[in-house]
Image (cartoon, rainbow, N blue to C red; front, side, top):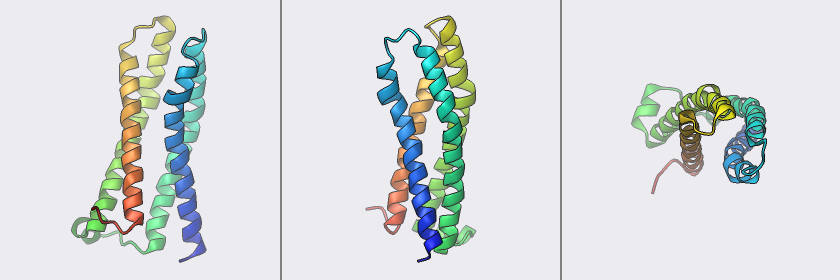
Length: 160
């Protein structure tokens, strides 16, 4: 096992922890903490914008380290591997979930979330608020599913 592989896996895990931790921190810590604050919309907006930059950096790093991990582990990038082995099928699922995360994150960060916060500054009743909330929840579930698949793959790629 090469030292580059270990470094890549380490960075992959750190980025995944940052990504999932940040997504859980906002609804579990920030939102309850600012619920009665008069500037809660501004605080949420600034927090979301700050995390968005680092979240996208983490996603880019997850993509890079994920591909590097596969390469350094000797995983073939062939149709046969992805379609005919159980390990390859799980890797395919992980890639599909990652694409889903990118799509939901993009919609949440650049469409629903930003516009919902702008609408909330005008009135507290926003339909976009519901979309922003649900796209965030879906993203957390996708991220947790992806982390679970990562654990399964690291343990041999066989589901019980």
